[in-house]
Image 1 (cartoon, rainbow, N blue to C red):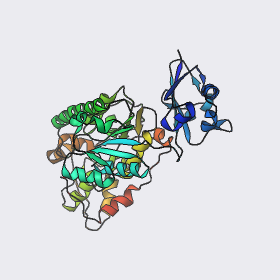
Image 2: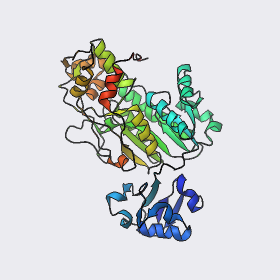
Image 3: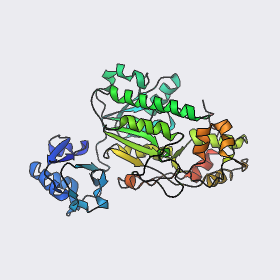
Image 4: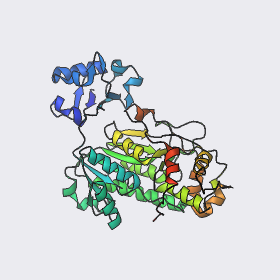
Length: 389
């Protein structure tokens, strides 16, 4: 057997446009030597002074060689090697499709892609969603996931797909509703991938709740899945994309002017939110801008799961930080079963769980959070926030 070397778009001009090349087993250095013999100049694109360039990562069977033996890492028969150039000068994809682009993270993602020179088309059904993606810089496709197959002409030049169009998971979220949304998530993901005229890289915005309640230690990407609450539809979407050229970016609670942060602040203002359970569970957090950058970073990485997180304060610490703002009083507690009357049992138990992950894999690709949850949540308490629609 041979070793398959995957070549991403920025490096393909140096190997005659090939997306993959078969090489003989050996070390990573041996593979680079083989590629240099076939395509003079390749070595200089990925190595400097006998080591990998700072902004080039190499993955063997999905593992970053920097955490192994570097260029001396052994590659055996049948394994797959991927080169990932991360330099700021890397060419962006010419065209991208964003499903779920009208949401909080989707709008930021579209704006970042467009700023980097990518043409973006985005699914949007309602007039509000169409205006949102158009304002962010995308050209709207007025359909949903199940109707996308009728827009083949619009998809012909797409080089990467970002799938953020998961079913709505707002309260009340009950267990029966979770199962129904899981079926919808699987069907929508299958329809999206089936509509593409050719295989392209796919980045799925998933949830860190696929790992379940992480009370003892943060979950790495190879941790077993035990999804609950909003993690169940996310796991169903991942399963529907399994075996494809897919990356799963597992995000904790996302803050911004919509979603959890908005609901917390509005709930505290109206004295309707109560701390679910004791409040000592970890609430992994990430800002919408950092989440969008994580999705873009994963697009050039090898297929597989990637965690992204900024911090993991406790639920009580988040509430205390918010209640430092004038007019917000610290709430009392409610057992998950009682909180579930209004929130739904699936959501109340998710809010009482510890959502906690490690993200070394994504950080090795050059991503790190830039937002700060405490200051940004406090800033949100000073503005009028839209109610859920």
